[in-house]
Image (tube, rainbow, N blue to C red; front, top):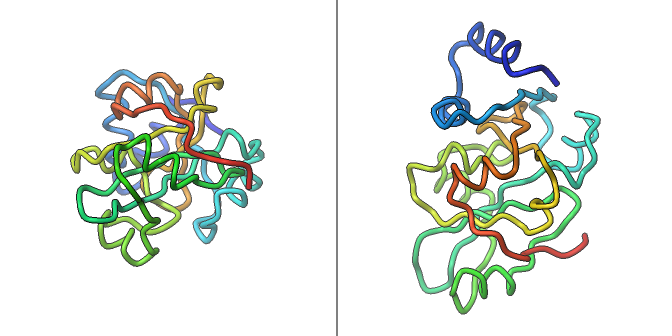
Length: 172
């Protein structure tokens, strides 16, 4: 991983900075860019490629309430499985379902493997962060593009996303 200044210079040399990075900078939240092969979509494979423990790499899942309403974003560690009943209870819905890959891409405008809550703040969707993340100083999340993750302070991420903390996962 690269330090934020080095990462910012590198990103500046790319076509442009991603909206997720601009958002963090606007809120004075430091971040580090972590690159991995953009062919990877599985969060556990991403963790391995980055040399990071899977419990520190968080995947963003798109979940739809049964009966309508805004989609939800659930951030859980790479080595965990979403507990749909727990998320439904935390979000005040009777039942929720995972969005199919095609639906997640259609709803977000992002590709699976690159879906990022940081890139979707303009949609004002409820964001739920799995409680174990609060025990970590930093976590890695998608930057909004396959091949790029951002290492961010957990509390800063919660603040900028307005994320609700809830126990929403179980071991894989």
